[in-house]
Image (cartoon, rainbow, N blue to C red; front, side):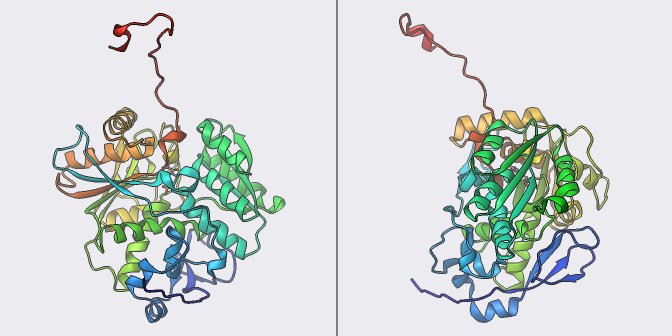
Length: 412
Ligand SMILES: *Cc1c(COP(=O)(O)O)cnc(C)c1O
């Protein structure tokens, strides 16, 4: 195999406010911009192209087979900053179940196989690696579960303290795994945005770095690697549509950013996918804004869904999600709670893939997009199964037998 190792600082040119486009230095750690909007990382594409071809980018000889391998388009200063928990390129698994049209071409990107069992590993790995470079000692996060677990794991490995605040009805496993992996884990009688407010109120006094979704520039840099993986897995091509369960929207915005970076490098020449932001009918601020032709979403009252990862009543990057959805000619679609459980059960049952509720929501979203004629039956689509189904409560088993007194009919 062709081995190409280039020692580098990194290829970041500067940071930029996603709203005002005002520039910020890469040499300092940031939260939101002066306009209270997310700050994004910008790269020097010319410089990347003098050192790398596309083949080098994907085949780079590396000890790290997972998302860390895309180093030229990551913001860390050196391979020494990598925090290794055994990341991998997550598989694309073709599925079909009786609920889908017979000739459908559906691939599930199974993110539950990443460290800590969810794609939150991608974002937090990068955020923690950068925080480490800046000498940060305490990181705090509001979470519906998976982000807290990922922060806990990567921060512990990097020897950084982590503080996790989650709603009191977060799935138990999520709360426990964060605590067991070393985070100071605190349960709050409120929703994720209310946990975020507590962190914001206390962070200066406590010396916490706030690592809330899109309130620092680097989680999205980790999440965008899903876009690189898809492009590589589809052999320099992309699916017709991507269905993404949308909470804070980091992954959707991140993939859209990744596609444009590959395009600017001249490596991507295919058509871009339609991006579908999927939410639950019982927490659908982005869908409401999309339908009302607004650029920003209003706070969703009484948010509630079994898909806890997308129970996000207000997203700081709302306009970035909506921009990507509109630019891609996709849509924002709300699905019912019943359809989430129905698809979770059907896919788990028929395809051997244990879906998390958020992943199941994308399947319901796919069927809804079909019925609205937004896509065709023979379009290639990717559904995101963002976390291991093992993290969530599952249906109860009701069949029991008595070991001393059973018969054939017990097995009917
Ligand atoms: C966080 C999360 C989401 C939402 O991801 P965003 O990029 O924040 O929109 C969806 N599903 C699961 C399982 C999650 O943990």
